[in-house]
Image (tube, rainbow, N blue to C red):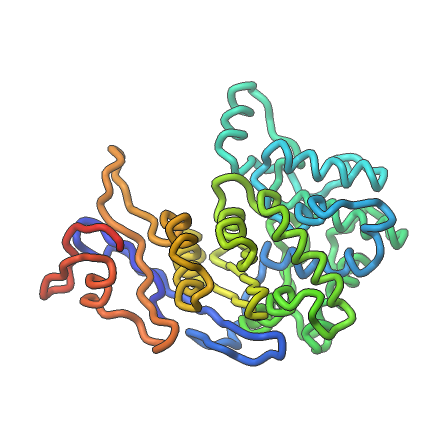
Length: 362
C-alpha cells in the first residue's frame, strides 16, 4: 500500500497516510490507479448520489414537486445549517410525513456556528441536523411513491432498499448478490464495491444525460442539482461545496466516512474513488485536489481558492504554522515523490537525512 500523504512537523515527517485511488471512464476503462483497483470499500455517504437514482427514475420528484435544491439535499452530507434543515422539512411536508418518520438518529451539526448556537440556547439537535437526513427523506419519498410501508425503511430487506440495491447492480451489470452491504452510521445499508466499480459509477454521474443507460436522464438531473446547489451538498466552509463552486461545476465531489471520497468529472466523463486506508479524513482533501491538479482539471485560480484544502498547514495552539500536509505521489509516473522532490515542490530545503526546513508551499 503506497503512501499518499505525509504530515510534517518542525522539519520532520511525523505521520504518513497510505491509501488507494482509481480513475475510470463510463465504458469501465481503467484510466489510472494506485493500489489494487479491485480492492473493496464501503462507499458510505459517497453512495448518496447513486442511491438517489432510483428516486429520480421513479417519477416521485414530479409527483411531489421536489425541487432541484431538494434533490441536492437528498444527495448531501449537509452540515445542519438553517437552509439544509428547511429543505429536508420541505420534502417531508410534501410527502405528508413529519420528522418523526426519519430513522437517521439525532446527531450534532457539522457546522460549528450551528452547534455553538444550540449549546448557547441549551437545546439538543433534532434528526434534521443529522447530515444524512436528506437521504432519508428521499427514501421516504420513494416509499410513498410506491406505497411501500414507511416503517423499517432502513432494513436491508425493505422494498425500498432492495430497489436501490437492484438498481445499483443493474448499473454495475452484476448480480445483486455480488454487492455486499453493511450498516451505515445513519442506519441505512451501505454498499461495498471495488474501487474500480465506484469510479465507474461516478463516471456515469459525470456522463449524466449523455449516457447510454436507461438511467441517463436521472444521472443528468442529479448532476445538474449538485452543480447548481453546491451549498446543499456539504455547507459553508466545507470541502465538497468549495470544490464544486470553485471549479465552476467541472468537479462534483462527495465525501464518505472513513477516508472515502468520490469525484465525477463531467467534461472528461470520468470518475474517481479515493480511499485513505486508516480512515483519516484529513488525508482525503489533499489527495483529491492533487489528483485534480495533475489531471489539469483545476486551474491556478481554482487551486488558489482551494489552497487550504490542498495543502493544509499544521498549526500550534498560538496559530503558528509548524508543518504541512503534503501529497507524495505522482499520478503520471505512479511513483511517490522522494524527500528531495517534496522539498523542491514545496520550497523546503531538505537535509541529507530527509528533514525539511521551514518554508511555504508554492
